[in-house]
Length: 189
Image (tube, rainbow, N blue to C red; front, side, top):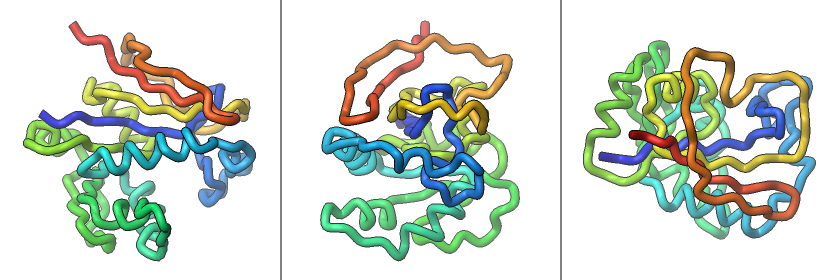
């Protein structure tokens, strides 16, 4: 069974909305106000190179598909993002343009099937509505959070109000320049 990893930039008050400032949120771009340092950069590179696939919601997919195909870098991060398998949970996306993309439908049955296959880790980035559904259905195996020391007061939260509850085990927490890197796993009986 494959491991599903949710990786997010998040503020101290739990906001995940528009860390890069390209989504039109009036408080967007907050992640660029802080240094994440070499350990923070390595944290992101390691999780991408340690995963076999991306799982994205439609809006995050469209943002990534508009940005990543044109990017290059010396570390090979952009090449990895562009070459790895991508799965989109969407009931409306019909013709994905980004290479190696498969639309798996608008419900979570496709995610369960994907997790049950042989293969490496599946990485989820952004995709707030998708993450909420994954949490509600206990499909997340690990959270990798980069916590930024800012309070926005409003915005889409990583964990919006819901009936779902989950106890987590802190696997790792360490500072890297201005941010805190955290790895947590659900406690399951």
